[in-house]
Structures are given as structure tokens and as C-alpha cells.
Image 1 (cartoon, rainbow, N blue to C red):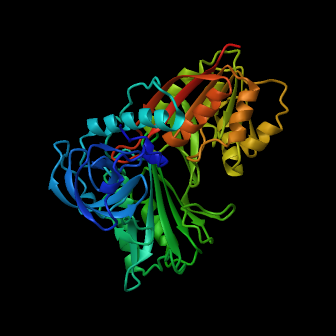
Image 2: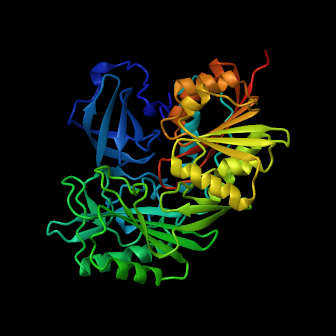
Length: 478
């Protein structure tokens, strides 16, 4: 049995020989067979399932068990005895040194990365959704396997002597940061901004924020570089604005390249380690506070806290697939749930009679309204509020022909699933970043009168375990 999908929820088949189960802290030799959802290797010890960190399909490893459950164990590879024939040379020095937790598969042949993700989608739908033979299209690979990210977040942290370190989190650690030399997923301009900021922060003794003690000031550096428009925005997130020579740093960053259209400061006084500023606490240090993203002939504003897909070319393909599955005509009414800044809503509105977007983040709704005005799209509206409440209080004079949902990783609340089905749209298009919650929600819609037509996976994040999926359901005949 292939367990690639089962790992997401721990749904593992009963063990036939429990006496052979490995003990905690025992070192065992294993041959990795496949990848589970989330990126761990799947192996067996006399029929007992073992999930293995830091191992790829085809590797034979010595692994130490660190957790034992009734039906599976978890282990970490401590020695590679035989390397998988699927391994390739990873270009990133940080990856080869096992420093960075961002990439998981740089040394796995890309064709096999895609094959693993394809299998994970199918197996997850089977194990968690109960779909015996789901129609899963071949996964769409990314045209760029490196330098594809249009946004990167970097963290500050003090070293043992209190000096600021700027880089990425060490593998498996939220409280440790290593100094970045170069990131192979970011653009070359992003690397330049990071290196310049590292030097400036060191020279001027910026007080780096400590994520455990909650001391210091400089927290995050966020660089958004949209190559579709040739524009970049640099955002410094800090606990206060008391940063030495802040304006001089901003001027030097803005002068690095004409593509850098703005440098902003966002204040985050909370203990939450998130690279976002609090409403009303953004300050423009140089240039403009927003840049532009171009998608399917429309222009979208991208501020420091805006959500946009981080792989622009694959986002084009993902949105095209969603619109294709929606089958929108000039008489179609579209409801877009979790619409963010209105990207899919506006793209759908160009083809529809009317489009309505629901979103619970006020800044996103205001951005969506500005995007609609900027693009001259007049047959679209946006409503602020949680999807569950807005659906419960539905007071529109029309019901949707198509519902498009692009929820966060947690997926849809059961009442949202129930209310979508209650509106009886002819088609539901579900855009997901989590195959596990997708499988659960698709099963819920099928139980309420829908048929799963097909699923289309996309790889927006090469060398990572993440998968994006577009699924289409149609209402079953009465």
C-alpha cells in the first residue's frame, strides 16, 4: 500500500506484525520507497511503516527512531549507506550544509519531484477523501526551477555577541537564523538587497529582535520583486522605528537598482513572529508604497502586506485553469470565497454577468476595490466578513451559477461546505494549497450532491513539499 497520502493525517493501515516495530531511539537500516505528503520518506520495517526525515526515495539509510506510535514510527536519517539513483547535485551551499529549512528536495531530480507530488494528490484523495479512482490530471511543472519566487521573507536575530544576523531560519528551528549568502529561490536583486542590508545593519549595530526573549527592534526584511512589471518593493518590519540611520539605509536600498520603486517600514509590536505590519503603522521611507503585478492583462497593486502568489508564471497557469473549469459565460454569476485582493474575482468578472467576492481582511477588500477601479471592472462587488457568516446571512437577489473557493490551508469550515451546497451552484471550483483539507472538503461536497469531475495539480514551489490544486465539481442531476 502506498502511504504518500496517508501521512497527512496519520491514517495508516493496521500493522500486521507489531512485534517487529522499532523502539524509540533504536537505529535501524531502511530503504526509502516514496515521499509522504509533507516531504518525509516512507519506508517499511518488516511491514511496519516508518516515516524518515532527510531521506529521498531510493536511499538506503541508517535512521534513529525518535517517535513511536501504535501504527507507525518516525525516524531521522543519521547516515546514508547508499545514495538514491534519483539524486542530483544541489546548487545551494546552504542546502548542502543542511542549514536551511526552506528547500527539501534540491537534490532530487525534478521529474521525480513532480511524480511524487502527483502521487501524493491521488493518494490523499483516496485515503482521506474516499475517492476510489479520482481523475487527476498530470501535474503542471514550473517553467523556472530556481529564482522563481517573487517574494521572500528574511529574519533578523542576534548572534551570541548581540550582533545582528539577517538570513533564513535553520532547518527545524524557529529560534535560530543563519546569515544568508544567496538564496537560489529568490531573484538576484533580492540577494543584493539582503547583502546590502546585512552590511548596513552590522556597521550601524541594528538591535536585532530575539524571537524568544522578545527584545530588540529589527524583525524582518521582506523583498517583493515582480519581474512581470520589473518593479520591486522592500519592506522592513520592526518592533519600533528606533533603528539607527533608518532613512540612510532606505536611500541606499532605493539607489541599488531602478527596479526598486519603494522602501517602507512596517511596525509589528506583537509577539507573533509574522512579517506583517499592524494597520495604520506603515511609513514610506522612499518612493511609493505599492508596486504592480500583471496577470492575464489586468494590473494588481502589491503593497507590503498584500497577498499574491509567489510564483508569477505558475500563478498565470493556475488562474487560467480555475477560469477554464468555471466555464464562465456572459450570463454567469460568480461567487468568489476568500477572494483576497480580488485577483480571481476580477479575472472571472471580465467573462461573467456579475462577480461577488467575500473576504474577511479589510485591507484586502479595500485593495480589491482599488484593483477593480484601476482596471475599469464595474460588474464586481466585494463584501467584508467571514465566509461562514456572509453565507449564513446571504441576502443577494440572485444565487451563484459558479462558486470559486481559494481558502487558507485549513480549508473550508463544514458549515461553509454545507452552505455552498445549499446555494446549489452548477459548478464549484476549489483552489487549494493543502491536498489533505481539499480531500476532506471535496468528500463533503460530494456527500451533499456534487460529483468530482477532475483535479489539476500545479507545482508552484519546486524543491519544497507544497502543492497547489484546482478541483472542479458539478451538481449531480436530481
